[in-house]
Length: 253
Image 1 (cartoon, rainbow, N blue to C red):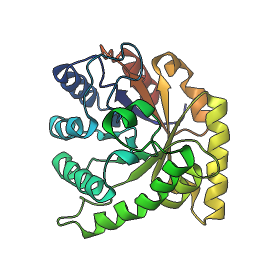
Image 2 (image 1 turned 120 degrees about the horizontal axis):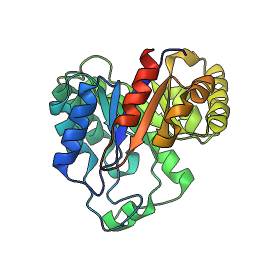
Image 3 (image 1 turned 90 degrees about the horizontal axis):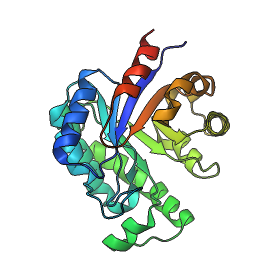
Image 4 (image 1 turned 180 degrees about the vertical axis):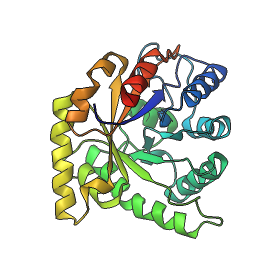
């Protein structure tokens, strides 16, 4: 089996801050390559009234609690924060972490977040237009902050839309994330390669990541065959890390 990276995404719902901090500290001690949370304001499954915590405040704590893994949101909703502010928040978390922050970002989709917090939901195409508008603003702000990020602060774009999202990945991103099954990932991966050719970008410059369920850990080879380089196990409370450990063993064999 080819070498690959292993990450974990913790769902910040139906849990406590103490449990989240214990989980990401334990994952960092395992020396996973990356640790993520999602960027929503309400649970995505289960009890819609369950506890839930905001992403970027948690990421600042994660930056201070960990030492090894890259960290980020999988993925930040572009609609929720002014792009200049998001760049500054990302830069600050990058400094807290010692240069381990990745800005994962997407156009947003969870309508309840928009409705409850007073954001304009718009349409899928309008949110993608906003993302295309804001990515250059974010990158420009990185270059003008004092101090700047530590080294190059990578941008990862999440999504699978073939006409717009994958074009934005080819144009702006250092990494790309989507989901399975493996056949879906392989198809989208090929489309991204095609966009890279059109935009004169080397496909190897974009890390290919995939979010997988704990039930898919033993099917990792299929994702590697589909072109994935970095497998991120999505884990809900009570944050059992055994599947992550199993995937780490496969990655290190």
